[in-house]
Length: 527
Image 1 (cartoon, rainbow, N blue to C red):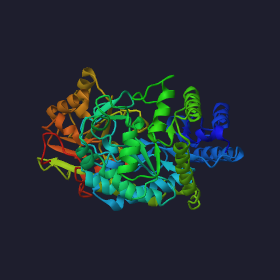
Image 2: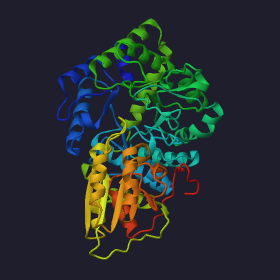
Image 3: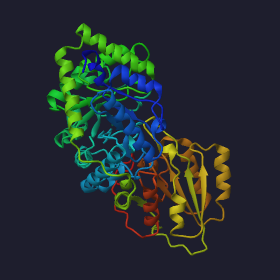
Image 4: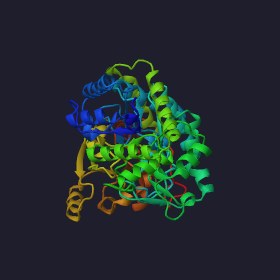
């Protein structure tokens, strides 16, 4: 490769387009010769056949331009972050945490890898190995396996092994740990105050486990690590002490380091992005995750070119980085032939999703012995479910419509559904409560109600309205803290269809609730 294009291999680009490559992205590829692309659900993803055609077109263009085959990456975590919505609806990491099963974590990885390979996607930005110790973490939540470092480590290693067994590279994220923050780094720079001893005992073990399992990539977090870089700590992505020091020297990782998205507000934007890109590369980051803004792509390429020419990126540093990227691409090229699209949502994969869902449902409380439900055929159930929304840019929940009422109808004929806004107003709450009279049971789903006062107020109103109430936390399990008087409380950790079916089967006694809380509930130490 000509020297002027070498720095392009440190870039992952993104673009708008589903059916064909736009002239803009074709021009960018010709100009920069990037390492590859990141595909996003909102920008690129339609049907499996469309996506397979798009990835094929990308690789054909790389071949035409004599670029090594592209890395094509996506955020396919399962649960609340699914870049490919038509794929098998795996419940996600916290549901896996509730199963306590490395076998199921490996199976989930195999399903993720096999389906991505069929679509022509060869890198998965998964698993999230953050230890979620903070109930008010706005960005990780159910993307974490839980709050116990050992459990997170075991399940992370298993999922990495399963994913990479299919020839798709896994990415452990977000280094050195995004589990104890209260600010979403999409919106600003959060500081992590923990001592090095705390980091080594809580945040780092899952990364060690993923590295021992052979994970091919590690993604950096845009977090300031105060105990390492001082009170004015830069984002870890820009920190030589974190990337080259902690990750490479102390943990011994010799694979590819990829940044989190460089358009996040913890990173300076606009023209200052040029300097941030160079700082990240100098800190030891191999691949820079750029988004679809052509201006930012140009800034990054030009800044890296200038830094290499001026010696700010030494030939040795650049050569080592390019060699790691080349090794990753060689590993991807040696993968077995990809399966056909028939593996997507095949019976075996759906069975894995169902088993995870059924093994994860957690009965936290049944203070009145209401379960299993025993209703006469004519008795009526009201199902109240908030309309999901994306609570962070790393979220695809808004694409989903929880099928809880439909799942319950398979067990009981008289079920009416009431969909409410995510944050129902006082008038909307009262109108719903007025409709509950005459029902024999209310099943109330919640989505992070502990942090949504309007949802919590609705549930408290339902508990006082008269009919018996069963509350099901459809996302994080912390909601019980907002209405501790709820007598019956279950957690599914997911609002995808397998979890809705599993919840219904638990309510009617068709399966036993065997899930165990992977996080503790504030104020409920014995829950």
